[in-house]
Amino acid sequence: MPIQVTVWGENVHEQTSAVVQEVYPKGMHTCIADTLQEDPEITTRTATLQEFEHGLTEEVLASTDVLTWWGHAAHGQVEDAIVDRVQARVLEGMGLLVLHSGHYSKIFRRLLGTTCSLTWREAGELERVWVCNPGHPIAQGLGRYFEVPQSEMYGEPFQVPPPEEMVFSSWFQGGETFRSGLTYKRGNGKIFYFSPGHETYPIYHQPEIQLVLRNAVKWACPEGGKWEDGYTRKATPPVEAITERGPKLHAPGTEGLR
Ligand code: ZN
Image (cartoon, rainbow, N blue to C red; front, side):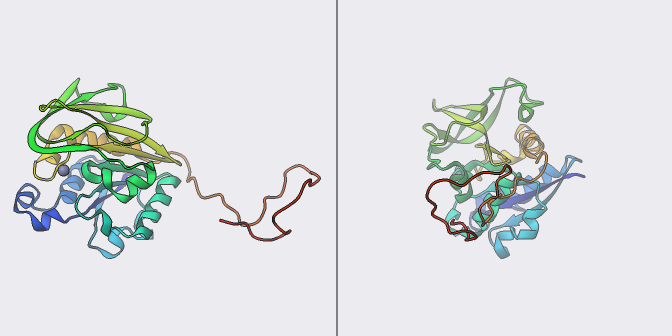
């Protein structure tokens, strides 16, 4: 069975910016999906903000192994109920790739629990992306580093929790450095944040970037079974016979609080 990827795109600047339209005439989400689709082990579909339930219905998410997320101008327009739904699927085991300005998306901030703020500069400068762990699955096929000829600078402090692993670290022509490829795990879901991807530059057309995305999808693919919410509304009976002791809050048989 191929890995089922849903490529989510905010699809706003593609409609409003002539520059972005020129770089991504079919939309960034379509470019990313086409890139992933080149791998015979991956099958893709796209979803956008403008669709019913942002294209992320229960049915779509239930059959998604890995979700990729690119947003920038309209994070606030993403319905909280959909964020809840995506979060639940990540905890169950769905992989999540958060790209570039998705650092400020509701879902990334929800899952990481911090502001996810960073510093930035839109100057079309060179970005040198260093591989921190050449043995990591996401870094396979790359050299010691690769360069993005024109990039938006994302700089420290990047206000995220300490990652499980830093796969990439970037240096910018202007002097800053940035933790540009970070892995996390929440519940059973693997999360990869990858910062290159500003929409006015052809970054998702670059072979090294495309390779990272395909590697990351394979890395983030669910393993094992679902980590479903184990909450039961009634008190759990003991496995061994015990004598109850001490005062109780809950009357026998009543439902738990949440
Ligand atoms: Zn940007």
